[in-house]
Length: 573
Image: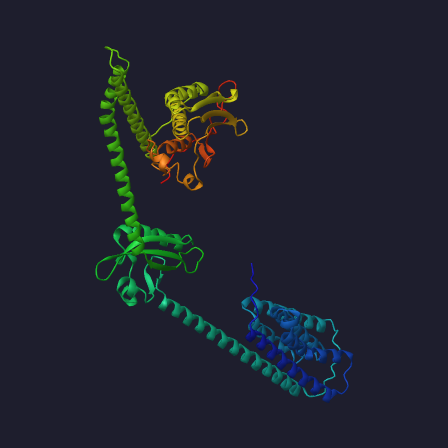
């Protein structure tokens, strides 16, 4: 697609000057004809008007761009066509093919060379040839009018050749001006590019199609400790680490053979022996059909970036090692702690039930405290282990169809004794459509136990903790809602809760036991099911946690309504 470029002031000035000069030559010829012949007839008057037509083109070229927006290319084409037609018309009036003006046809393609390239010259030459053919046809058909020229043939030929010579001199002078302007622009462009290359901090190189360096900018001194002449003519293998040659060759081939931009991160050899990490970006300099192209490359020092990347990789590896060590530690501790805890819990339960004899009331109280403390400690250990598995991506769901109401009743029974001691009422409301669900039964029970435990813990005597479940999300998901009438949570603390080991810091919470893992486990287990947990609360108004399980709802046949591929969960850092 052709692109119209704006006319330059220099091109427009040259066009105006040339057309004005042509009008001057035409005016001189018209005056000479008038002096020799006298008053012209209609045909001769048209010819004289044609000789002065370049003056109109000069005027349009002078003011057209500012007011009428006439493109210079159009004016040039009109001028060339009009010039060729004028020569043909004058030749018909002055003897046809024997006219001394026929020689002027050679000036048409010469003038076209000023306004365009080879295509414009060919077009102008073809048009001049067609007009010349028309003159010949007119003479062959005997349609030439009688010539009114009275001077000898040699004198007319002399005047015609002199006028053509003047016109040729004007065209040649304009061509010289254009060439000088082009040379000056090229020199200015070359100087600009040389200035940019000399002062660029990145290394700019030009390569042959096989990768050999043909030009290098002065930045090679800073990057490689070498002068540009020291690497000019070398293959890249001389300065690139052997292990990185494959990446460099792939980038060069991408540019040279496929005409696309290529890039590679490589190690370059500095003159003093150390290696410099660099990023090479290359592109074809000029595409040639059927042949590999030369390549222009820009090379940037990325050593500092590589140091940062290495530091990040080391930090990541250290964090992974620490995480693996933590997991191994917790796994070992689970075995070491669970064994004596199970014994403590079991024997304290036997003592509190007086299975082998009657004990005094004080011993029963002691045994009950030992049993409760051991159970609490075991729950904490299990919570820590579950959170560790989830963060490590080792926690796997075992989904099945089960009765949510039975599971919720089991969780309520588990918390009934602590609730009675705290004088907190527990309520359960499961809608019929949400009774059967498809999810991990153990995980759902753990969600309910954690939320009920928090509700009982932070609800004052006389309050209530209510568990409800309903079908949501247009019948495709299940919502489990645990609401209490407790003390509530401030907006500032809501943003922190749900992260592992985060707790609200106040006098009331410091008096309660816990690790701060309850809500974190709820959110993580919900996410494992493809859902989420939303916490809403206000100070003095209680707290509501809504757990959404979008793929847990089932139809009347017990088949899951909505299914999805649930991605492995990664806890937020």
